[in-house]
Image (cartoon, rainbow, N blue to C red):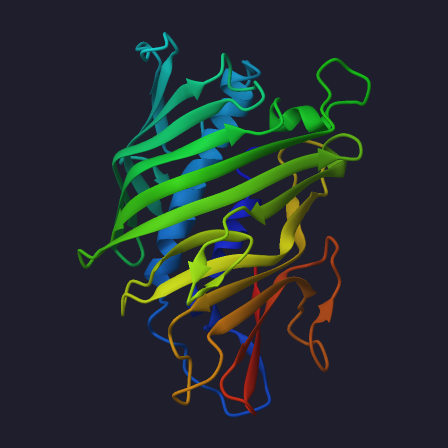
Length: 338
């Protein structure tokens, strides 16, 4: 599955600037977006996740399948696999070139992939480290920069590679499903010099009812931290906001589900359903009120829906429904395109 934007879409939930440039349905007066969760918070998650997709691609198709037609993801100039670790396993270094522009962004630095547990990346319970080294991203339009350092762990819970779930049932390579997790902490430095640590705890499940056109991807949270004195289940990410240094967690009320509507690994994959929440210790409005924002996927918005976009959960899905209470009697609902 190359260059799919499926999981990148998820990281819109990490940003409340998605409340900008939207169509609104209000039961009270419109309120401004809390500035504490602004674009840079989302940008860090988006950029980090893109690299995770690049690595997943590389592990699945180049290391696991040794696919002759495999093309490196945009921005990667070369791969060095000459060195080995203490377990005599190859270390794969993916070098990004700052002379290559990808989607109006420039990436520079390298990501190192090392098998830490198991004999192969496709082995059940195999673990590999994904380390960001001197990694920098520049967004051309805004001239914002983000620097990422640190290591996360990729664990193969089921064994196999994600493309095997799309193989014909009965073949030697077929897998009922493939599950992997990403856990760990990365340090992100923003344009203004502020540094924030992001904690990741995500599980992805690939499953198919027959070939690529039947492939689905499900994203779940696997952490249960204590937040504001109570445990929160199914958390996929936690950190502090860039402005205000406020704690937040992102958790799943219902797993995000992408379905493929194409006959190849390119998809397209469409986010058809799911429900996530951002819980923060920021007071949203009127000096009181809940601090949880609901983001629900699977709506169809055309710009002329009356009275509101419809929940469809199919290939026409293209919008989130974002709901947040401003006070006991004032709510706000906003629809945002994926």
